[in-house]
Length: 379
Image (cartoon, rainbow, N blue to C red):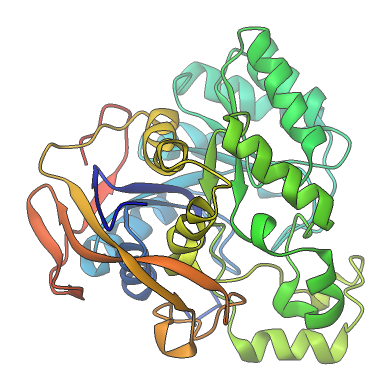
């Protein structure tokens, strides 16, 4: 394995929750984006389900954009959101022009206790087809209805569709069958679904609970194999910066993780600063090639949202660095990570975004705040 690696363009994370604005005050665009650039990312895409301040309106999109410009260390794009209870069809045209895509939640997660049927999103898809047919529809898949939803989004409406955080090979098969039909379809897997398992949920409580849940050991290994073969398109983090205090509260009031107790849930884990390092370790073990890893974290996610890299954007890694993650390594405002004690490879020694030296000599020293809104944007 090389001791030094320069990634032209750097990494793109299609799936983060920086949680600003929201009731969750453990993270903001400053701390989240700093963790992102430490992790080798030059672009992060922020999801809409902020607790108490969902991105259901154009005004909310504008508010997020203002905060990004004020705080961020790297470019950030945001997703428009729409759920049946949001009743925001009229807001979609204004939102989607300023967003990198739309997120639809079909299964329970933070701020959504419902299982949804594809037909509930038909009116939303009609508006997206009319206003932004080139931008991806990001799905939080349900257990049973992913195939029907992909058929509606990509087959019937001809929109690009991306299944977020797949946690089983059956979902991967749905996406690959859609590709075989010529539909615009892709899927992503989270690092925690590759390096953690359902056993962690049973022994570590809410610090290892997310939606979708962690998989069995055999399924996690199968997902890594599918990723290595290119059957899973991208790696995403689903970075969710819940505080340790928030996790402790739900451990006290809902210790078994009863999924029907929606008032006492706290799904997701932080760790964007460690995602690439954990995957470089897997590459060192021979489980995935460096070439496939760069494709999954840089080339393919950029293609999915339609952005290009400036020749002046690059990230240089020192891959001779090997260590175990400690609490001192945590950058996210959440202040913790479920990856403590895990082995990693690599450290970012320099990041330039459009020529701006965001990281030099291992230290973050400049901001390169920018809002990414449209396909064709240059990072």
